[in-house]
Amino acid sequence: MIKQIFGKIPRKPSKSSHNSSNGEGGINDGFSLNPSSGPNSNTLLKPNSVSSKPSSSGSVGSLSGNETVAQHYTNQAKKSASTTGSVMASAVYEALPSFRDVPSSDKQSLFIRKLNMCCVVFDFNDPAKHLKEKDIKRQTLLELVDYVSSVNSKFNESAMQEMTKMVAANLFRALPSSYHDGKLAEICEPEEEEPVMEPAWPHLQIVYEFLFRFVASPETDAKLAKRYIDHSFVLRLLDLFDSEDQRERDYLKTILHRIYGKFMVHRPFIRKAINNIFYRFIFETEKHSGVAELLEILGSIINGFALPLKEEHKLFLVRALIPLHKPKCVALYHQQLSYCITQFVEKDVKLADTVVKGLLKYWPITNSTKEVMFLGELEEVLEATQAAEFQRCVIPLFRRIARCLNSLHFQVAERALFLWNNDHIRNLILQNCKVILPIIFPALEKNIRGHWNPAVQSLTLNVRKIFSDADQALYDEGLMRFQEEEVKNRENQEKRESIWKKLEDVAAANAVSNEAVLVSRFVSSVAISNGANQLATAGC
Image (cartoon, rainbow, N blue to C red):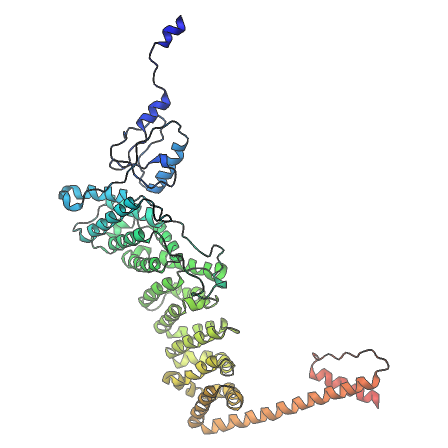
């Protein structure tokens, strides 16, 4: 009886059903992310479709100043995953009114709402998914670019915060890569592998354009914007230079250059961060897609260095730029690297000696293609070198050039001989011909007498004629010394062969069994000569 009475009393709604009826709180002007569709959801709830009153569980909250939309969404999705029996409203992604359709007083708030709307990132791996929503976002991004380009008043702090938040939500991501093992050194030919193109580029391109317009805008106050385009933001931009998509790296190059120019407070940090990227590339991974673009930015930066050069800049040359010649894939960025090196020598001619000796340190031994590139860069450096610095490095430099002259790879020998076609370098050589000619004369004679390539022989004859016309007496002296060395070498060769013949005869005469007699050919000629004399004495 009592149970029947209590059964007719209306029950109080449960705590869980109360929470479900309130749903998730709205975020930023009535838009909230849909927690029911999982962590990869890219849709927004319709404005005012769910009550903005937070639930008693405390799982709903507004975005904090430093929290990105992506982080907020991830947190909210994790919290909502533990809630059962929730009833969610259907999710839609609707376009907001155009800036032309609202009064000027409402444009600022509409701008913020559009920025929040564009924080949603769609999955482009499935081309057929969310087509309508992707197009809405693309049109919204284009409107934001036009607004930033045409605005005629300074951006306030709130707008800057929302703009950088939107950029971060779209750009800062894990990069797709075909080289997950980081072994670019084994794949140095760019045509061998197809680069990975960014599938989300239809949106990313407009976001990059938005960021560029924001940084370049005269309405952006650098003193205020540096709070949001800070060191962390710059570091994450630099991380994106490893993208294999050339289009993305081109945008990054332009934007980072603008940031370097506008935010003077960030300049030392940017240079140091680029240094660290180079150090890791040179000494650890030898894998990075954006070295050429970073060097292109540095070429412009070096061009603007004030004189005299700071010690920091000289250390950057010695510790980062010169060692960049070491990786096997230097061909991918050598043009930009050579420009940076030449800029340093033109800024301070005293650095020429340091640069030349650095090139000699990393000179390739078995890679002929790389050797041709080094010779080209060497010509550019020597063209900016003065006589005093040239004399400091002339002996090790022309020992290396002499080896290049005798290279069996005709392009290496030809490129080395082309150095004499440069008027400035030829004058430097002739001023120091008393030092240079004795070093390279044997190489010139060997080429004339026995190089297989007729073009190399012809160029060598031209070089020899330059020396003979400049100082016939020195040339004759060099020729006489070379001939004397030839006679001496021939006599030594005959002597070695004679000693070996005597050793073989003595060994054969003393052999009393069929056991082989081993004579080492790695013994010095002096030891062999002494041994032969002792054996001859014993035989007498």
